[in-house]
Length: 202
Image 1 (cartoon, rainbow, N blue to C red):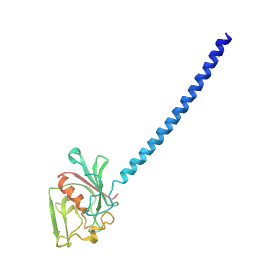
Image 2 (cartoon, rainbow, N blue to C red; image 1 turned 30 degrees about the vertical axis):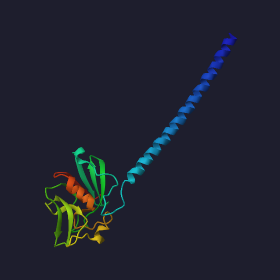
Image 3 (tube, rainbow, N blue to C red; image 1 turned 90 degrees about the vertical axis):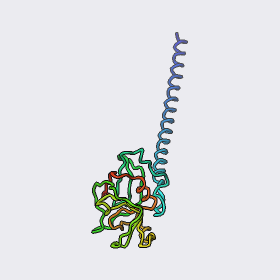
Image 4 (cartoon, rainbow, N blue to C red; image 1 turned 120 degrees about the vertical axis):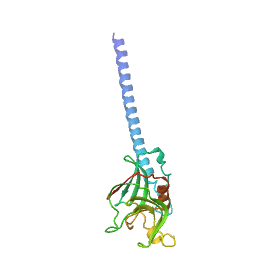
């Protein structure tokens, strides 16, 4: 009986020791998983923030391809006046971010509210009244008055570099939403009539 008890006692010690080893192993594994998860989230955040190109009116705003709108039938556009950014949205998800410049204020303010892409669009225009024109324009309010378009051009069709270099940094338009040349062309080529456009202060 004493020998049996001793065997049982030794077995119990082995079981307890094994159990403690397994617990420590699980804790270590959990800690490693937590560290990996944290690293993955950090990497994901870094990747997201690094997807933007430096501001350049001649280039697309992001390093990645533009979204395929045929896959997002409910896509819409959000323009932030404070950030000078135009977002191509799908629900609450940002599909693509564009640098932009909005209205300078007063009579040249970009109106806030909800609008819809209108039928009018074209490859170029020039306004003698403002002394500026632009390329790849798409109307979103008042049928040709408020537009998405490129940075401005002069009477000879040359881009106005002093204005173009302020893209994404200053609100200096006459009320339209200025974009880089590739971004404006993408909207001209891909954004359909009827798509919702939300213009907000923030």
